[in-house]
Length: 114
Image (cartoon, rainbow, N blue to C red; front, side, top):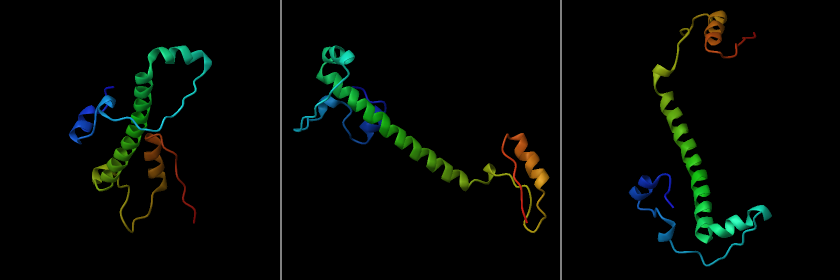
């Protein structure tokens, strides 16, 4: 099996091949749909192990990716280039100007109630 992020795993000193890792003592049974039993049997045990490992790896990469995106959003909070100032402190809020700006960006308009 060639992991999607093999370079990163090697850098961290983790195994990059299932054949390098010892097998667990506990055996897990697997039932598959009748229409797929012959295909799975023909592929063999190693193929099943690799399929499970690839699925687990994809799920963990999604988690890491979501974490990385969250960190990027935090970094953007500190960058003033990502904000548009539509007024100053103590200045009257111009709702029409704000709504016009939001409309050009395809966003919902706002309203202010007393």
